[in-house]
Image (cartoon, rainbow, N blue to C red; front, side, top):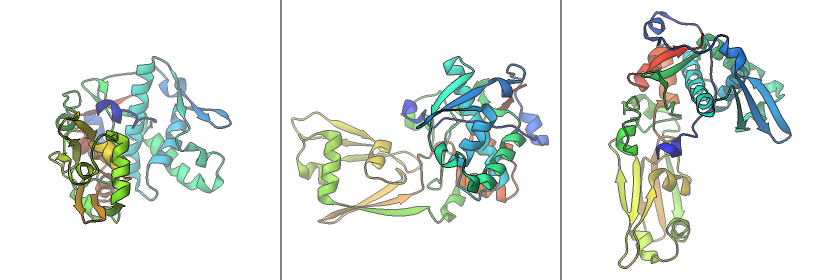
Length: 307
């Protein structure tokens, strides 16, 4: 699961620092003029779009951040995008990264998006090269749209001690979002058909319809479902795979069935690890600065900066 979530990567920013930011900056440094040295090559349908690191970050921020969110929340997201980008540069051992288009096409040459891009560029500039580290290394900078009221503990779910900063924290403000809850209804035949794509045709339909041992973490997100049948090999489906299979907004679900349908009652949007974008925006509206927001979602992490 740890590896599965790694693709939540891409981008970076620069910026203004308040008193609290100055207190938590790590001593780690990168090469001089790092902002000018590092490049991103975006693979588009028509070819390669070459961008400086900071320009790419502004475009990527416009793609991943909901429109209308306030400045400090955008800055927090910019730092996370930069963190993922710095980690990728290190893994590739290169100052030039090639990335897939990943939504940027809708912004290329789009004059109607200039106001949004201007806000994103400002957030990138005002975070001035900051990214998040834990004990000197870039963190797993996970983020998502809306929690179910609590973020998830990576140690519990991924069975690893590599991300101690990804510990579950309350996020009650997310319950006020208009997108907090959703209901998805799936007909019995379709439900069984989709499950067979994961477990194969060996299992009886009654087992797939009524069976399955569903497990949940402490935050209330489904972690896995296990199917067993006498004489057949046990099959386990990961919680994130299960929710994507049925097009659910998150794995924080409650399930009910009648004779013809299964109904999923879903809370939140996204995988639940790291920073809730909606929660970050609420904190920003309440006066918190981006560095404060990040510290509350990533416990023990520090800001480091390109020099």
